[in-house]
Image 1: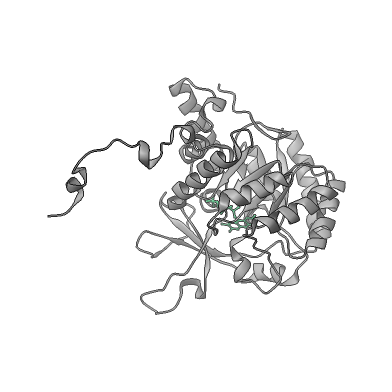
Image 2 (image 1 turned 45 degrees about the vertical axis):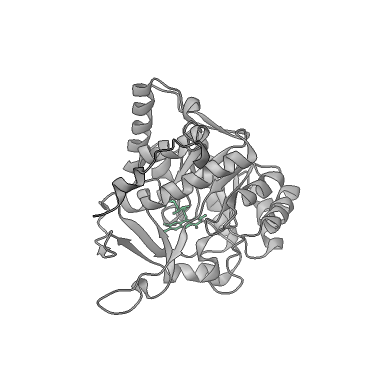
Length: 347
Ligand SMILES: Cc1cc2nc3c(=O)[nH]c(=O)nc-3n(C[C@H](O)[C@H](O)[C@H](O)COP(=O)(O)O)c2cc1C
C-alpha cells in the first residue's frame, strides 16, 4: 500500500482528500460518514453572524445540468460531465450551536486520524476575528477563512464578503492571524484577474495554505419557459472548471514558489482529477460536488484510484506534486512548425 501522507504547513494529512464545505456537512451524521469513508479532513459548513446569510439556506436550490444545459434527475448517479448549478446559504443556526457541533466534529475526527476544519465566511471583520478566537478556544485545530464565496454579490448586502483585492485580503488575514495561532487556510475566489497576487497576499499575511479557487457565478436561460433556471443567478461548477483551476495553481506556484502548500478546489470528480490537481502543484484537494451528488463512496474510490496510479507509475505522492507544473513551457519555447495551422482549418 502506498503512503498517501501530505503536509499542509504544520498539519500532516493522512491523504490528500479533503471534503470541501457544503450542505452535507451541516450535521454531524454527514461529517462522520465522510470520516468513515477515509477523508483526511472535512471542512464543516461555513458560518457567520449575518441573519440574511443563514436565512438564505432556506431559499437554496440545486440543479444538475448536462452539456445541453438541460436539467438532469437528482438520483445520486449523475454522469461524470454533469455540472452543478446552485444557490446556497450559510449554516442556519446561531454561531454558538455551530461551534459546539464543530468542536465535537473535530474531536471525533481525531479518532480517525483526520481533521474537521472550521470554516468562516466573513460578513464583518470584527465578528470574523471574534469567531476565530472562539474556534481556537473550542479546541478546533484548523480554521479556513473563505473570502471568496461566489454568492457574495447576489446575497443580501453585508451578508457575505467577497474579496478580490489583494490588499484587503492581506488586511483580513493579518487581523485573524494576530488573534489566533491555529493554522489558517484561506479560500479564494476564482472570479478575479490576478489570483496569484491574492495567493501571495494571503501567504504574506501568515496563512499556512491557500485553497484555490471558488466557483463562478452563472445564469442559464430555460428555452421552454424563457425564465432563468432556478429563477436567478447561481454558482456554477463542473469538471470543465478543472483546467482553469490547474492553470491558476501553476501560475500561483510560479509566483510564490514550490514550498508554500496549495489546496485545490473546483472541478475534481474522482481520484484521477485529484491527481491532475496534484500534478499541477496542489498538496491536497477539496472535493465537494462529486460527494454531494454521488455520495460518500466517491471518497474511498478516489483514494484507491490515487494509490493505483502511484503503484503503476512506481512513484510516491511527493514525487508528483507539481510535476506537470514544473514542466510547463512558455509559448516561446514551443516547437515552430511552418503552416501546421492549415491542418486545423475547415475546407
Ligand atoms: C451545495 C454547495 C454548498 C457549498 N457551501 C460552501 C460553504 O458553505 N462554504 C465554502 O467555503 N464553500 C462552499 N461550497 C464550495 C465547495 O466547498 C467547493 O469549493 C466548490 O463546490 C468547488 O469544488 P467542487 O468542484 O469539488 O464542487 C459549496 C458548494 C456546494 C456545491
